[in-house]
Image 1 (cartoon, rainbow, N blue to C red):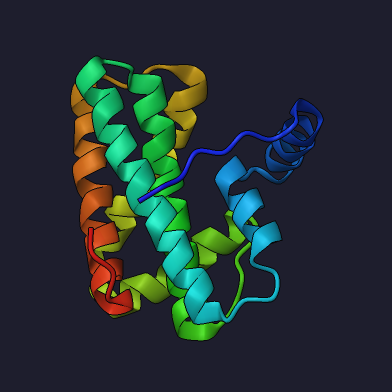
Image 2: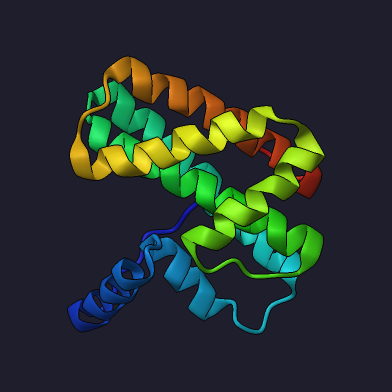
Length: 161
């Protein structure tokens, strides 16, 4: 599914700095730069691939008991899935937390009000990465809610989870 690559430390530092300044995950920044000229449908599928990868990694972190890492990967998976949906259906790139919050309403229209709970759970996981207050049950619950969101978006994009 994924491929590990090594890049020079200076390049990694620049990517991390940009990701932090924009409130994004580093994979999002890398995809953005690599896919500047791709068709939005291709971008959507690539975003979903990384979303699924992050969700799988979140499960592994949960199993190891690393709640902070699991939390951040749950958040990243949800954010990239929402971005994938925006590319797939509207051909638009979401580039901020605010745009994710706004676009989430498109998913509510498409799938139902349960999406709000999934999104809220994902946001709480992003906070938990920094604060570390969530219990294992909280993280497991968020994982399940975000998994449902990702599965629904995958069905629309026709990508396997």
